[in-house]
Structures are given as C-alpha cells and as structure tokens.
Length: 53
View (cartoon, rainbow, N blue to C red):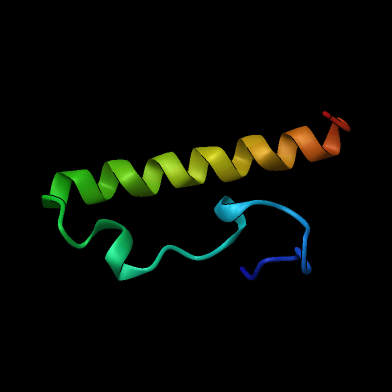
C-alpha cells in the first residue's frame, strides 16, 4: 500500500522503511522496529481522521 501524503503532508512514518533504518539491529529488533513503525502509522492515521492538532 503506497503513501497518500504529498509534499509537506504527513510524517516520516508515512514513508517506507529502508534497510539502513534497521540493518545494524538483531533480527528480533527488526520485528520490533517494524511493529513500532506500523503502530506509529496507525496512530497517525487515526489522529488525522479525528482531526488532531
């Protein structure tokens, strides 16, 4: 699923993860990092839907 944000909209959690974000981490840390990003994306989407500041 692609990002729907245009220039100046959204935050870094709207972008795809890239290998250098987590390549130095242990495999378990990779899963934790991906979960963290997914939760941040979900939180960001919920906040936009509820018109959070």
